[in-house]
Length: 174
Image (cartoon, rainbow, N blue to C red; front, side, top):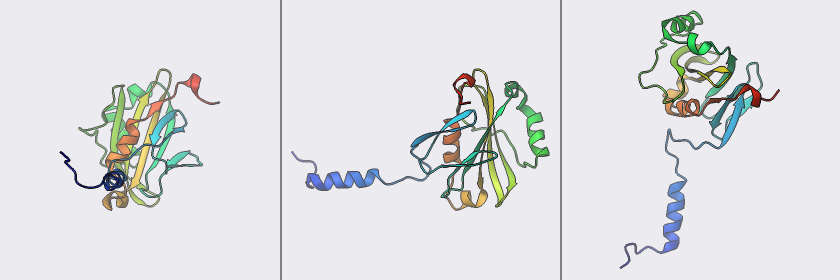
């Protein structure tokens, strides 16, 4: 008994077309990018931007990601109310530790904050993480207008941050 009466060719074309439809917030990672001490999985259209600081940027969403090495003790120092106070002293506002933050097994600190950027108000996502012998801070930021119009999403930024890992110093390029 045939469940589908449609010709197979039509069914194959339909399935291929359905597979190419993109769902907002779901992004396929196409490449591994390295910024300083950190490796990320990012969509193919993220491009390296010469620094300082060196960064990755996606024109369509407005998302920019930067990473900088920190002393290893930053994993212990960059948390708690003192870290939020430090961010406030640097112009960050509304900086909570999200209750539904990143799902990572290794020790880390994750903060979302508002700040004034070159193009106006921004949302910033800060992640402090470490590896065997190094630590890093990653800042992803996007104009609030890009979040409001749907060109960028918290889920897309958090997917990039979730993929971040610190490269061991012995494996880093000189």
